[in-house]
Image (cartoon, rainbow, N blue to C red; front, side, top):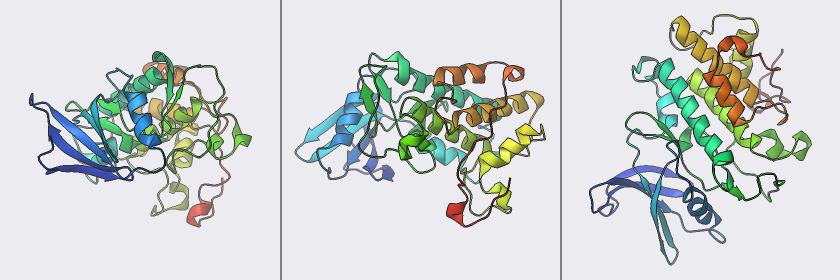
Length: 304
């Protein structure tokens, strides 16, 4: 299928991804997992969760291979790679394909995919690793949620969620996953990750940027909150029309609501979607996102 693993598409902690072609000529991505640890929970999670989904914004699992210790997952091929490569690319500001309208459409598409996982399936699926790297783009730059290795299935949508270990990627993990003092783990944990991601889509950079020129610019959510709070020019990576300015502001306000420390204050993904598709004038500015200080880890002082 992969012509002896000739074309490598990517590499991660899970293993490697190769380009393949089925006998009918359809292109696929073959994810070959590393030697499995423990009982192979990531593999089982991926097959069990994504295997029962069917949505335009969720990557399709075509099949899987299971032979001894060797396991692989076969997905539909996504020709434009990951959202991460697109938004952090050095040519971001000059990429004509990626205007504000397209970014706004992507944010809506990802939210629709998450809404489906949270409430559209018979079994609620929490992803626990929403980030730009795990959003794949097809030939039309339509986004699809991928990589369900950390996902959890919850047959009873009202059941309390408990987990034995931390799940996710630093920078996108909700506070309640670090400490129950912040609240209960729920679908709102995915909402937090989604909020951090769409703020990165707006900024065209990582939310924490150690190499920023000014201390106040190191943590993007704080910096952009000030702009929204004072109704200032956004000062982002490219000029925008008034319509595009509205789209960007909607994404920022929704992102800031989604990253609230208290899960009870965060919107559901359905509400976030309504806000993105609604009118900017109807949106309230959220409370300032509070953290003990994300900047302490990079050795800088931060004053409000």
